[in-house]
Length: 412
Image (cartoon, rainbow, N blue to C red; front, side, top):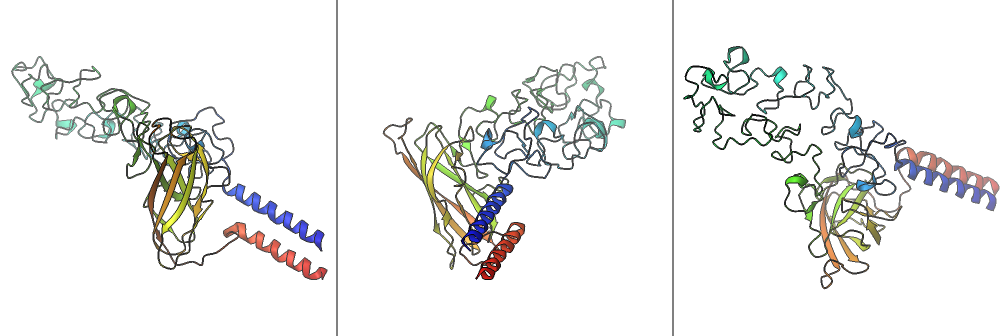
């Protein structure tokens, strides 16, 4: 009987290990092409399954341990995504211009250059009024120059009276005005293309329309935004790393500070303080701090919970290490703190962090910090306590347990 029990235990343990690793396995071949795309907090999908990298806190490298990046988290690496900024798992491209329908400003008319003279989001190739002056192309005396009064002098410097005509009243004659239909007495033209910034849909000429450009007046085609505050590095005068949708940020020049977000376990798309979660589903707790390369002792605890709840944090304490430019700290593999809400309502969860070796930035400052976040939970009340698992993984495990009991009973 002992031999049967030992074999049974080994089989069950093996199944548990395989199940756990299947649930959080890395997509095969991530970044094997050598292209890693545009960094973001989510990992890279690479598998076309509609999500970011699953194993984002154990074995990946780069931003949140990802070796491939998928900015829009649609499961397709940026370098092979025809809409890297907009989620479109189907990669539909009706006009075959290489730009996916989800982000194509003329989805049914081929226009790889995505030209949009008036910056209205409708590409010139399919815009009935590309210069945005309120007059349709077929009637417009200057189809590519805004001139509401339809004075041809706006686009023809040799037209009669061109030297005196001033369409927008900015004091600059239409004949020499770089935006004759827009008031711009300064005649600003950052990219020196002859079209004033006031009417140039891409003022800095970096290929990104002003409406989407995080530095509209400074060329930055890579759109690098190291602190994730919505301003590109080339025009951002300060650094404070934003780690949640509430724009909470961490300033590395200030005294020691920790922060945190929550996400459905294995899912970075919902990582936000205050996001809604369901009862019975594991919630992962992510730790951030405004220091680099400084080990942190941490303790997570549920400090407020709905009436009747017995939910607590598993793997609540330990030591975390710095993970990369995202200012998120990495837990030891297998020790990722989670809690499973068992009652609907609001949970308050606090993390206390302490620098293991003191603070190199502020030697006399506090080396301890705490942060409390809220988790809104919906769904039905569930029973608390230990559970083996659920879904497809639980079925074979349950069968093995029954088999083991049967073998034991037969042996007796």
